[in-house]
Amino acid sequence: MYGKAFAPEYQGELKSALGVNSSYEEVLATAGALRRTAATPLEEARASLAVAEASRRLGRVAEAGAAWRASYRSARRAGEPGAMAWALWSGGTLARQCGTLPLARRLLTHASDLAAGSGDRIARGYCLAGLAETGRIQGDYEAVAGLHEELLAEARAHGEARHIVWALSGIAQMHRNTGELDTALEMFEESVRIAADADDARGRAWSLRGVADILSAQGHPERALTLLSEAEAICRRMDLASALAYNHKMRGNVLYRAARYASARRMYARALAEFRAIDERRGAVLSRLGLVKSRHFLDRPRALTLRDLEGLEREVARIGLLHAGKMVSAFRSQLSAAPQVSCASPS
Image 1 (cartoon, one colour):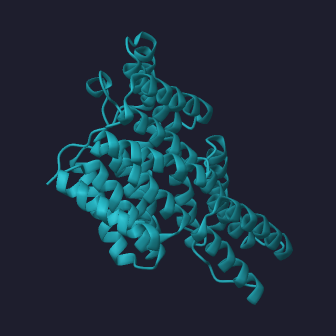
Image 2 (image 1 turned 180 degrees about the horizontal axis):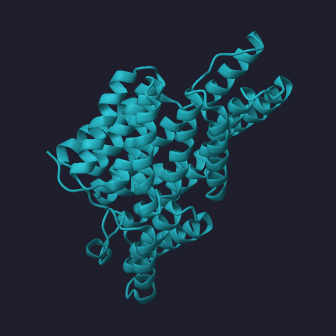
Image 3 (image 1 turned 90 degrees about the vertical axis):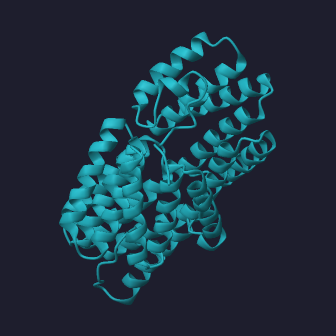
């Protein structure tokens, strides 16, 4: 059994003032005011952590970077390794968002060690989840599948709904990307139910996106688009910049699979602009791939498509995105094999 979702990154006085569904502009206002009046370094660290996370999720990368570093410095002055771990977790998550995956792993590994030494079980769980997600978005499923399962079991044992939703969604995504659509759908749907029961709006938005992806892949585009519209409303209400961009990218995927290439092209271009605005490099790469594929089916010259794919191959190799690299290579192979290719669904 599980309880209502909570946001462990809001600590001290912020724990009672903010909740998991607080808008990020509200978080910035509340945490910013507390940071200005903080009486101790630990209070400063906690307020700066909340500022960092709200800024990151709003796509304000420079502000997020300055805030997590300020949080770490304040936590170090306070002699609080648990607070230091939370600050590094935020920094590692930001690094992953910006596509600097080696830095993300270093920060999250150090954060996990600090959390373990401090006895902060939740911080350690979040740090390990960050490491698992870093490996998953790279496409290194064999390395991180076990860690996802371990964290899911731990979250279930402690009734932590928000972490259950994260783990279920991550495992479901791996099943989806390896072709196990029915299993993925079951897990995404369970994630939606738990998020709704636990009043975790953000988790519900991400999980609805997963369900929409599977329904689209199974040939139900209109149902998928309806779910994406529902998720988009949540993203807008909570100022979820990254989730909204991924929602739009998935809408492009659904349209592409339905052979509505002009509409898909417009949606991918929109998502690309949104990802670039928040320096989300993985999302930008996936949107660029969708654009290339959509344009190909709108009679873009084959030579230009191949040139675009070469640029994408360099970018995914630089970031270290294994799954995205396989998608780029697969489409290139299809182009090389025949002048006309069948629709390959982006992910």
